[in-house]
Each structure stands twice: as C-alpha cells, then as structure tokens.
Image (cartoon, rainbow, N blue to C red; front, side, top):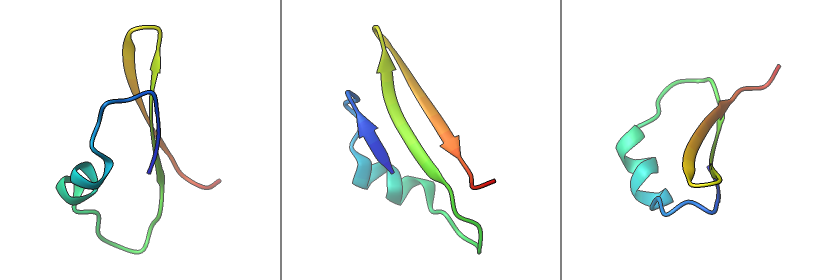
Length: 44
C-alpha cells in the first residue's frame, strides 16, 4: 500500500480489506487537488 497526501490510516485499511489469495496488487492512495483517489494496480 502506498500513500501520498492522504489522511487514510494505512494499517487500518490493510486490516479492513482482509486481502486473501494468491494474487497481489498495490493500492495507491493520493489526492489530485482536493479530491481523494485510490488506484488498484496489478502486474501486467
């Protein structure tokens, strides 16, 4: 999990997501102006 300019508690979000399985992804939390964005990125 990557965080840039977001007020999200990364450790709490990690617990709340309860990710399972063999697949992996990166969650990017950021702001563009005043709007928050979340990107879920998987390997190609």
